[in-house]
Amino acid sequence: MNLPNALTLSRIFIVPFLVVVLLTPVSENWLGVPRHILGVTIFLAAALTDYFDGRIARSRDQVSRLGKLLDPIADKLLISAALISLVENQLAPAWAVVIIIGREFAVTGLRSIAAADGVVIAASRMGKFKMLAQVVTVALLIVSSAKGSPPVSNFPRPFPAIEFWSVPELRDALRHLIGQGATTTTDWQVLLYTAGRAMLWVVVLSACLSMYGYFRAFYQAVMQRDAAERKAARAAATAPASSRATIK
Image (cartoon, rainbow, N blue to C red; front, top):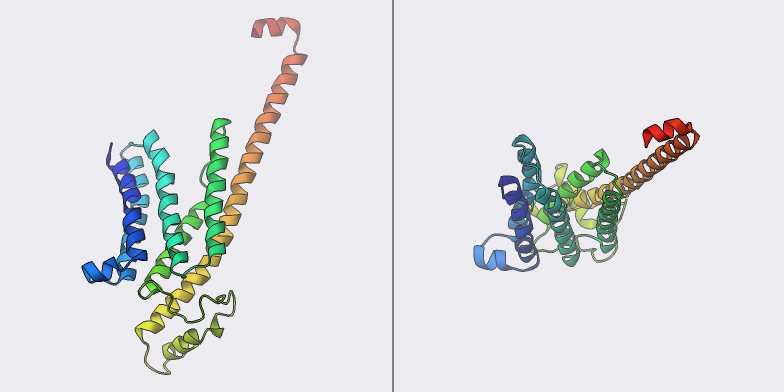
């Protein structure tokens, strides 16, 4: 046990507290703090441990097998718990969350198969961008909620994917923002919620693109390895008998 692994474990233990804060009024009733404020604080603190545990492990040369095992598990638990809580609070559509979490299972399975086959798949830039976009999206959606509910009245009707301006609360918030009236706290929540819903599309697209990149990298690695093995087999078959005996 070292500091990087302790940070990773803390991220796992934070998940139940995050779910309780997001889905129950315990924050308002017991602590007197709005749940969206405490929820986004807990989530961002947990997300920061993901950055610091890897950085500290590399700087102190404390990279361990336990850390390599726990780190992706902690990341997936944190993101999955937050996204499912957002669906429960009608802050995010279920179809987008299914795609994001399904991508995580698919990539995890692919990496397990690749590791068993002796192929190492490194994290791609698109995958890292997807993780950052997920953190920003979840934070925006949590902080935009009021008592765990969306700040717009047309949910659970389908929230416009492109025509955000068709939402009455958003039109009012934009008018207030440009000076036609006073900007209220609700206006800022509507603007943040709109930004979060827009970012959710970025997460879905980056999740699909990064998954394609991982599967393509695995396919290319396997094909190159098979080609090298066939080339070596042909070279061994065409080598003179004396050379084969020497090799043996």
